[in-house]
Image (cartoon, rainbow, N blue to C red):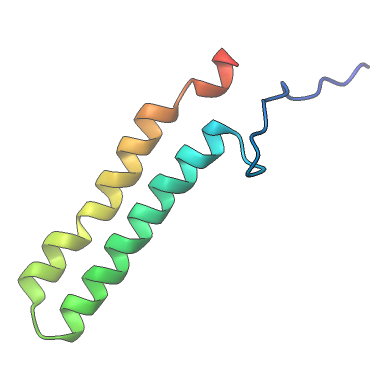
Length: 74
């Protein structure tokens, strides 16, 4: 049974493909939102913390929506 390898992607000078750099940016934004939410909660601002905490799944959902199908095009 022949095995198929994943399609090759172009690698930039930084060592990451454009797809992975974009994915990393969305993950970093979600993590930053989580950290900010915990900070707000710890400083006694629970309403702001909950509001910012809701950004995490929204950021990750947006990233998933935008990046779905990117691998199929390359």
